[in-house]
Structures are given as C-alpha cells and as structure tokens.
Length: 265
Length: 265
Image (cartoon, rainbow over all chains, first blue to last red; front, side, top):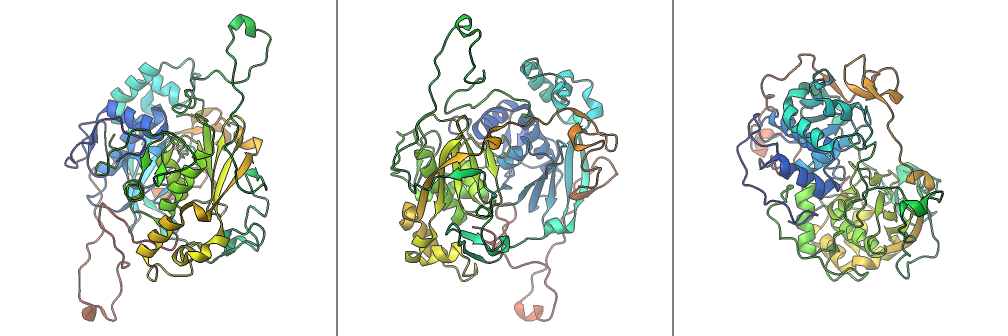
C-alpha cells in the first residue's frame, strides 16, 4: 500500500518472532528489515533518516521481542523527538488512535505494555556504555553541533553498537493510564458554530482564546494562497553585508524540509 | 516500502496537483487514492478504518490543494483523535519530526501552513450542513452509541457528503509557533544515570516523580514476560451472575485491538 513510501524494498514475508534480531528491526507482523531498509523507512515516513529514528526502530523491535506473542500492547515514549515515529512505523500504535502516548520526560526511551495487565518492557539508552562510541555519545549529549557531526561515523556507531548500549527493564504502567477517558457530550459552540466537547466550557477552547492562529473571516478560500517570495541566488561576494532571507539548509521543496537540526535526535 | 502495509494497492504514479480531487484523497507527492484505498490505508496505519480518519484524509488533501505548489508546510490538528494520523499518512509532517503539532482544542479541524510565512489554510466541518447526513451528524455529535451506529450508512454519508460539509479558511499562524525551540544542554541525571535536558532541573522529570510506570530494578529482562491470563470461554447461561474478565470487544490479537469506541472519531 502506498503511504508515502512507494520506492523502497518490498515488505518481506513475516518471519518467526524471537528476541534475537537477525536484521536491524522487525515490525509488529514479524517482517524484518535491514539497516539500510530501516534508513529508507525512516526517510519515507519522517522525511529523512534521523539517527534517533534509526536507533529507535531497533529499540522498539527489542521491546516487542520481550513481549509474549500476540500481546495487545500500547506504547509510551518518554520523548517527543523521533522515537514516537519509530513506534508508528513498526506497530499499530499511533497518536491518532491513542495507543501511543507521548510524554515529554526528556529521556530517550520507549515502553510497550500489555493493554490489559499494564505489564511491559522499557528500552532505554545506557549512557555508561556510550564511551566506546564517540559519535553516538556526541549525538546523545549534543557535544557537537550538527555541522561538526560526522554522519557516516554516527550511523556506523549506531549499527555497530546496536543493542550493546540499550537496556531493557520490566515496567508496570500506572492504572490511571489504562483508563479510557471519554470526551463526553458534544454540542455546537455558540461562538464559532463548530462541534466541541461540552466539558471544555460554555464555548470551545478556540473561542476562549486558545488558538494557534488567526482565522480569516472571509469565509471560503477562492483561490490558492500566494507562494512565499522567491529567493534570488547571489554569489557570496555579492551577499556580504546584505540581509539573509532564509537559513542555509538542505531544503528540497516537496521532499526534504531541513537539514538535521539541534532538536533532531 | 513495507511499513505495516504490504497488502494494499500499489501506489499510483504521481498525478498533477489541483484543487479538484478526482479520487478520494491525495498524498504530498500527488499520488491519488480511491475511497476504498483510503479505507485500506487507514486500516494499515491506524489499525482500523476509523470514520474520522477516512474523512480526515479528504480534509488534509483539500488543505494541500489550497497551498501553492512545493510549499514547505507544517501542520496543526485541533484534535488528538484520528486527524493527526490523516496528516501522517498523506504528508511528511509527523509528531516525531515536529512538523505536526497536535493541539487539544476539541474541534475536528486541520491546518497546513507555509513554514516560512506562517500563512496557510484550515479545513473544518461545517456543522450547519450536516442535517442532510444523519449518520455523519450522529457520529460528530455522538448522538448514537457505537452499537446503534450504522457503519455502512456512515461511510456512505462521508463519501457522498465529501467536501460539501467542509469549510476552508485562510489562517496566519502565530509567530511563536514558527520558532524552533532547542532542548538546550544534555547531561547525565544523577538519579537514574540517563541523559536528560538540563533545563528540566537538577534531576530528570522521571526522577522528580513524573513517571507513567513503575520500573523494575531487577535490571535486564532475562526472559519474555508472561502472557495475560487466558480466558475460558463459557456459554451465556453459565456466565450469569459471574464476574466479567474482559470487555466484549472485537479484539483480534496482533491485528485489531478494539471495536470502535466512544473516543474514536
């Protein structure tokens, strides 16, 4: 099926499930992917093969390997960066179906747990074991800027270090996270006329002022928006002393939005 | 490429981009999908073809059609339910790369905006126009339980109503949402020994008590977790007056986790 990823390798037949991973990662159906295929999956879903995502699919695979077969599991990531996408690439847990919860705890770790019992497994990075892998250390602790980073060495470190830098622990999810909370009754907001959960108040949260954008009142769009101003390319000499319209990234319109940034793990 | 979806239709060649959609939805590369293919994509990514997701891919496609070609866009959803997955299925904006922001505003709407200018388009549901589509109305306002819902009629309503129930407005994102915030310095947490952002405090947030689970101190997992207790099937007569171990869902282990619930849109 399509989903942003028509150019990659064909999905392999489901393999048996064990805690030893012969390939780099494995999805919830048991299909295995090499390191290179994992990079390609990351690019297709996430826009580029972020190092943290390439490591992340290994972490999720390891966690799945420690769950009993056919466990109906939910997922938690302790970071918002990259790792949620590793869960979404390999499992049916997504933010939209709420089987994946993202918690902004700042640690690069993922947990999968039986949705009935709350028992599961957490995979994190053992920072003590990173000394042998200088680029991986520099990436996790951000001791180098992206410009200083040696991407090839970093991917090599990730691949060679593999599970040796990960730790796996049993977890028991707090019962309140097993509860399914209903939105409750829905009504028409007297402010904007849209459907909203009554539990939010007399008017919807947007009409209460909690809005990320200004919405134009000129109703429907008649024609497409104008493009951003086009950029004139000039030589470095001509540019000296002039303003910079855009950051110097590796943007490829429609394909890739930015080079690896400080927040890309 | 694999990604949970090997059994669906092959992705079509990229088609031209216009605001008129001949098929049900279109991804960021211009590839089009029929209604049935969209259902299949929803099932492959999200676990089941949630009505809100099937409508959602149409909403995202409509929003994309109103952006100038090759716009580098970010996305915002005003709900956590389903719609974020429509964005992740059709575009490169994901939660993990932070090009998709999810705001819990309780309205079923999505906005895409130029990441440079902040100008974009929002697609929402016009609740005034739902009267002609009783199942769609019942779904949005939750006037029927899932048991009462006529799924076939609902999908038919979605397909037939299509864009007639959607509204499209220009938006300008607030400048603070265009800022890229760095995590800042990373250090080893003296509590747990894991890497964490120093901005979170002297110890990481988990060591501060903000944890969704109890982590076992017995270090590494030696063997897979035990399965949940198996359920003995008994006839309704035998069950009268006994406790219920599990809810009566349509769970299929490893494939489908639950029937459509009250929070599925």
